[in-house]
Image (tube, rainbow, N blue to C red; front, side, top):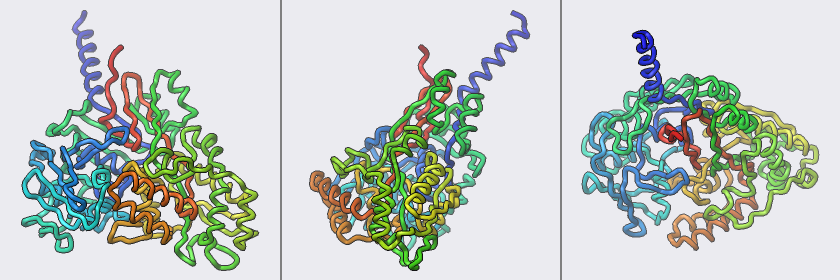
Amino acid sequence: MTLLAVGVSLAAALGSAAQAQSLTIALSSEPTSADPHYHKQTQNDALAAHVYDSLINRSPDMTLIPGLATSWENVDDLTWKLTLREGVKYSNGEPFTSQDVLFSICRTLNNEGNVSQSYMTVTKLLTDVQTPDDHTVILKTTEPFPLMPAELARQLPIIWNGIVEHGPLTFAPKEGCGVTGPWPTVVDFNNGKFAIGTGPYKLKSYVKGTGIQLERNENYWGDKPEWETVKFVPVPSAGPRLTGLLSGDFDVIENPAARDLPRLKQGGFEYIATPSTRLIFFQPDIGRDSSPFVKASDGKNPLQDLRVRKAINMAIDRNVIKDRIMDGLSTPANQYMPDGMFGALPNAPEIKYDPQEAKKLLAEAGYPDGFELTLSSTNNRYVNDGQVTQAVAQYLSRIGIKTNIDAMTGSIYFPKRAKREFSFAMGGWPAETGEASALFQLWVASTDSAKSLGTSNYGGFSNADFDKVYHEAIVTVDPEKRKNLLQQATQIALDNVPLIPLHFESSVWAYRNGLSYEGRRDQYTLAMSVHQAAKK
């Protein structure tokens, strides 16, 4: 072999080794921030899971597993004790202690830049946080909170207390918990200044609309990920994502179109499809007599009439949406959580597609000629969200409702929705706790901010019967009794249509030959789930 040939072979080997240490993933929807406490969305939480740990984590099938807490116990009805993992260090080498848990809790309660009170679901319910030693945290609540472990799973990314000036930390959120300097802002995390975590990766750069770069955290306490560097690239359209995979620009892509899956297999690529718990729905504005994007001849808000909401519900053919728009990769939703989930109805009746009956209900409600309604949605967040909105608009037009569509990027949409600027808004929510209470707490319960209830109830729905049953359920420790109460709450909600359920998404990941991917029901796209496939 000549010296030139040896040089070429060595260069090729070195290039191949370098490539094997880097991973590029194309996202169908990009994170809206690198701040782990900014806005609770799947893509934000997935990014945070690379850089920050939570006290409790979830396996791909949604089972609770230890994170920064190695164990947790319900000491009494109002007290939870967590034992923290020892020997954990942050990416800057500083040790992780119970003070970081206290600080992270206080930051969520003093984070004015968050959207929709994100990451406060648990922390607002706490009456005391005690740190008797570096590896013990005791959480106190005013009422029994049986779902504490499930709610803590990915609900509280832990950040280092040293990013701000403070004296002794105490649980006194209204007084600042001992923090003497300014609280960190979303900008401080986006530019990487305070992006210090205990997760498997470090944030190298976050450039909105361009990409995110991570590098392996050599201080990580767990199994080191295979990839030294990871790049996430936002590519909202399925076509360019597929082209990038086929050309070798991307190693993994999210949500290729189902119609392209046979082509991938034929080309030597692989994919995995995993059902999720994410419900896609529309939320009608029920609480306001005058809604910004509803126009009716009588000057009223027709969405306040239950007959109108029932008419809309039965005007939509969910099976056609599944077959023609979702390419079969969704499950039509007849209730607000997947069948078999804790608190779901065991035999929920199908929401029958019946446009003629829908027209009759509109006429009974006083709208025989319909009314005008704008459907607001994202066009880059959920699978085929723009096309789904168009389909729903067409179905509503067929029963006499004149529809308009206002679709926009998630970064614009979600802050506007949080300010209740819409009348009929798309939503998507995964049942992360594994039971019906999760969605009900945020989206259906009457709004009570102090108790973290209804913080995403932008439609203003309020029903005393629902609240009575639901409030009893969430403080009921006995599992069987709580399940029965949640089923009652589910039936009351279905009867009153606070949300128009459409379907549960399935997630698909495609990847190049030589890799394997472990799909997750929570829809997180994680570099840690990508592995070099074993050679056959």
